Image (cartoon, rainbow, N blue to C red):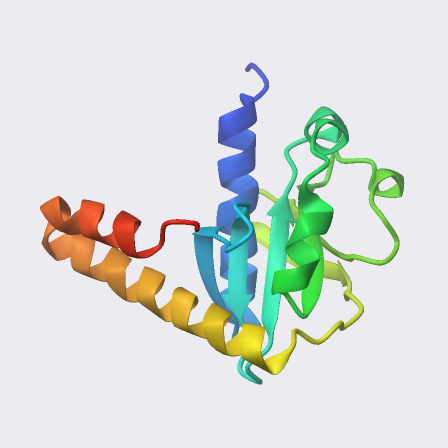
Length: 156
């Protein structure tokens, strides 16, 4: 049996991580465009109103090639990496949370330090989160409306 491809591995990590989010009572939303032009792999809204950004890494090469992840900090109260069991944890920064997946299961191994998002930014982020989530649900019912959603969420 061959090794899973980069996209397959990333998808498996993302799915297991989203399941863990739901178990933690976090509402995960995938591929969230942020106002700074970046895209969060998972942005989760916790029950206490805080935002968690989870960056999915399919392997060391993926992590080492990506220098954008620090840009997510300004849009999340906590930043996590989600990796699978084969990923060398020592590569990841100590000041981030760590989620490790195995198949369909995931475990939060290290909590992330909290850096509160300013209230004005939190409100704007909450609005973006709600519009994106509602728009995706509406698109399931009316796929031709997807262009309208992209226009609303365009980065300025």
